[in-house]
Length: 142
Image 1 (tube, rainbow, N blue to C red):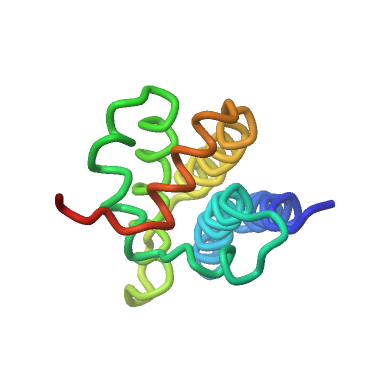
Image 2 (cartoon, rainbow, N blue to C red):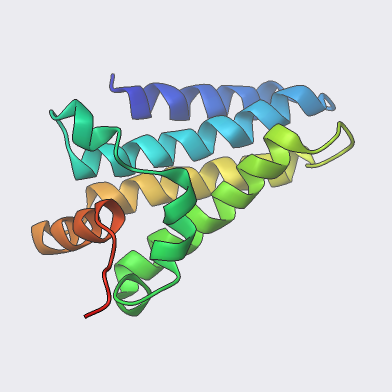
């Protein structure tokens, strides 16, 4: 079982066990986001640690909301999932403890992460390459 698979299994387990408990819902959402983040990092570099660690949380939203990623249907769908999950992960990790999510909302976010990971795994080699290049390298104006 890969790290991404283990993170998703944990997120699903936390979402199921959460009941009325806010802490488990918060951890489920955060863990689901990190599963997607590591799926993207793995796409960028399976065996090269320096490249794997080059993917930054801060640039994901910007990259997915700009050309060329926001113009390719499959990448656009992954991008909207990543942006939503990243926003929810920040809410989950940093907002004060009050009822952030219902159990159904928590499950929906975990399912969104699962769908994004499936979409990342199904990308064509060309889309994988394009995505990795945009996520890892800064776009310099000409």
